[in-house]
Image 1: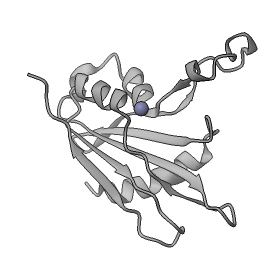
Image 2: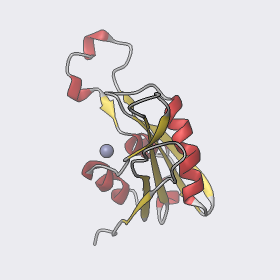
Image 3: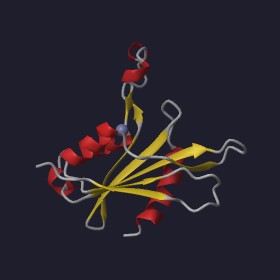
Length: 143
Ligand SMILES: [Zn+2]
């Protein structure tokens, strides 16, 4: 699998999403050459102003969103690979480039709990013409 190529495409997908607290993050989980689920960061209490008062409680991360979407097929997560891309606008020009999308500790725990084995993410890119740099971490299975 050419995960770098997939992540380049995913940055474009992330750019189309509505930002949440300024962030556009998109996650796909792949296993045996197939995309088995996806998710984006989003507000969990969207469209209801009654629940928008606590800014800390309205965001779901893309990784957890992808895992929940696949909740009915947990077995397919074993040995899977999570890809996380972030799109951010450059300071000047407002073009989208890749941004650092390393999963937070909570998402890493969630990926591990579901049996995901590896995670790749985009690193900060300065201009759209620069190479997309990819970060990687093996997720150790809990004993
Ligand atoms: Zn997270």
